[in-house]
Length: 251
Image 1 (cartoon, helix red, strand yellow):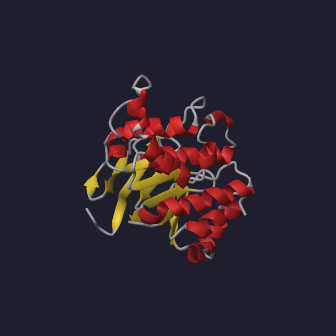
Image 2: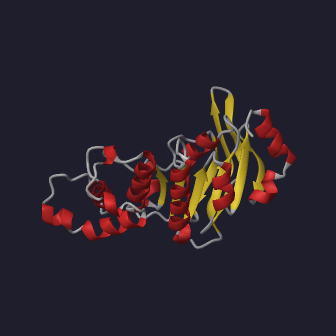
């Protein structure tokens, strides 16, 4: 269980009616690291993410998490094993407050569904942990604010809090800074670094300055295949990577 690599894929492939979206991807994510999956539009990053959490079923290949083969497992079972995809598994209810949202997520972790009818005493027993999580993501002053009233970046922070409530060992973050202004990008990048202190993070991210700042290892995909892998200094100088980005209209 405590091997060097927490998540590995072997020959991971996904075809859609003859179109190969992900082609023989061999990925190894080191335990306790921040690993980024990048590439130009259409590179297969999101498809790869969907395969890892089984929102899509691979055409071929094998996925191993914590030494266990999870190929074919249900998404909910994979989440219970500690591999949680943020911004998809986590649920943020717009008209519930920040505190209520995190409490709902904590109920889910305890095995209860969204029990809005539970007594106040039961729900209040979750408050201490909920407030800890809210403080950890920088939302302490917004405890009683309905989620719908939060600024975009703070809403993403709340989504991270609800994901952390599930106590994941590994988090998959799907474009965590997409659509954010500079200030929010900085806040979320700092939050990712903080929550990664005692867990593994795999993220798809378009913002290359965030990738450069946070990532220990970067895997570059192009046309569904691994084009390069290494740290940012290594992959940013790779002529194939430069060509892939320039050729697709990316800087």
